[in-house]
Length: 104
Image 1: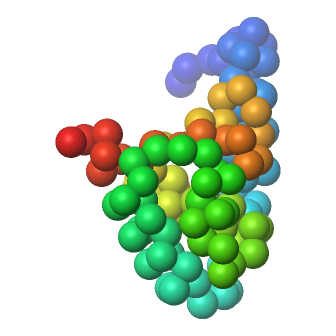
Image 2 (image 1 turned 135 degrees about the vertical axis):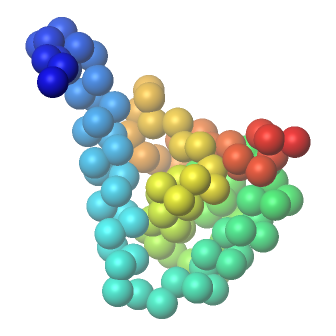
């Protein structure tokens, strides 16, 4: 068993809260048929190696913003991209990098 100090917990709490809020977007898609959105996102990630969430919202213009955010978080959870929430919560300015692009 490893004890976590208050200082260590405090240092990581902001990032944890950012991720907890982001996971809610993915949860929103739980009972929705998002196959089309996820396929379009995969296609976009293959052609755009990195960017901001706002870039993806523009690329996936046929879908609402919240659904795109949810799809991106879902893709991050499944390891398809890295999502940087270290400095801010999930927003249009959040940066992401495709794992496929990073591995090349």
